[in-house]
Length: 225
Image 1 (cartoon, helix red, strand yellow):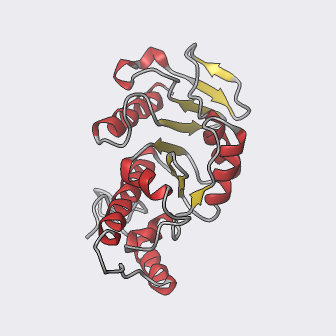
Image 2: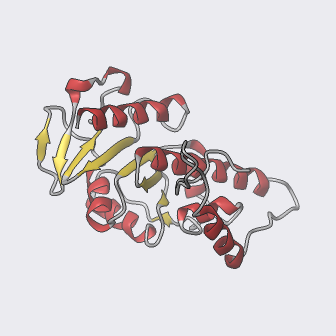
């Protein structure tokens, strides 16, 4: 549990270092059995250490630590309750993704990495942060997807590991940046990938990567190639 908590903290610090969040915005969690380790509310990530662990059960009752869990706890718990393969969640206020969330109802399929998130990424309807309404809107947008945008808010992405959830989050922000750049060219319309091409990409990505002993991994690549 201590090791898993420090992985949560390292991932949270990475979101700040990579510019995906500002200050104490955004949050990170990991599920260990029936316990959810989650970043606390309003505490800078560089101040968190091993003794600052925050854990709740799937009903939201605090079982570890004394710091108050993130205000976005309802979103994290909703994903874990309804998604069997979710073991880690990264929520950010990434600039380009948040900008896209104000413009469209779905991120257009600008790149084949769309397939790594299950298909075109939907935008969840706006609701006040930290509310059950926002969690419900998010679940609807996550149907058959591993990530979504939150209207006028940011991103939510889950994975089987913290590394996978973070990599998917970074890919989503990058795709939003690409689409914004292409869509901003006067007089030109970006070409988009049709569903059949996304299906082909999904099949190929499913076998992408390798472990150090040469076996295949299921994680998405860190950098599009």
